Length: 145
Image 1: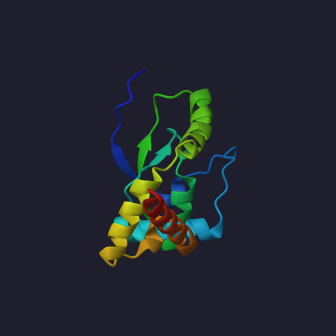
Image 2: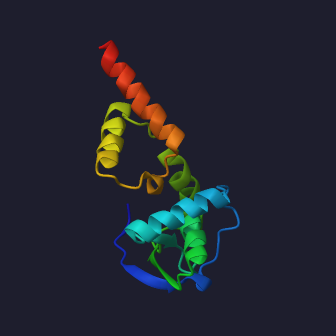
């Protein structure tokens, strides 16, 4: 692995260019969810860009930033990656997270804990139906043990 230490800098949203080969698509509903998350928690996950401001990871975050009217977003330059590596990373960044699973017992505990705190769960990305399903499954599992 070569030098990967990069600093976060602010870039104008208007300067960032989407990667034309990005196969990941963001629905209007998902961009709205990302925007709600940014409003609630802040812009906590910098956009990854090439040296010429082409987006490598963070297309949805940039779309949400535009929706929110943000002038600038935090970015990290991936100067250490070749063009081929950036191209591969676009795929890896999108796919690797999908390969993870959930510990449904812990998920139910966390969701219930937030409900008990009267926290607005809409910013988590889970729908009410998904939350109900997870909590119902946890209750059923607890009663059968």
